[in-house]
Length: 242
View (tube, rainbow, N blue to C red):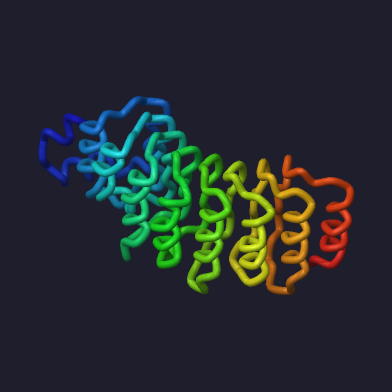
């Protein structure tokens, strides 16, 4: 990649990488300079389907250097990096790009909070390509999940698979998510495990499952504090959900 960058020949980069659909740097530490080189080299290539940058110790400066090239990938893995709210902003910019090709986005454990979720959710509401999104392991809390839920309501939203496990969701925030579930027609797979929903939170989700507009086919509820009392509401909803 560094050699291709030093050549300053975009045509050479495109010719060299033109047949490579997957670029995986998983677990390889990338400096900001490495990120700048990578961005410059892959930008001319329109055949990259999967760019895996998980566990690369990328921080805010690195993701900013990568920013101009992020929208060109179909499957983008950025999980387990120290991006923080400011580091997720370049990703939001990529999602807003009218030429965005991102179909699947992994953003698990990137230190995103409810503060950064505001900009990210706004980008989701204007993106027409994304179908799979992983936000697990981030400290979104109820307010952050509320923002994401509002984005899901957008009729142009195409998200089919959403992971929100271990994001600090409680029964208070579950009402916003449940409200979205009852109206969103695209979402078919949802993981909200490892959140303190309790029986009251699961009751809200169960009510959403009764909606004729709910299209959920797969629901993961492991370790949410559900008891036999809450299970009655869930079982009742399952018996009426087609």
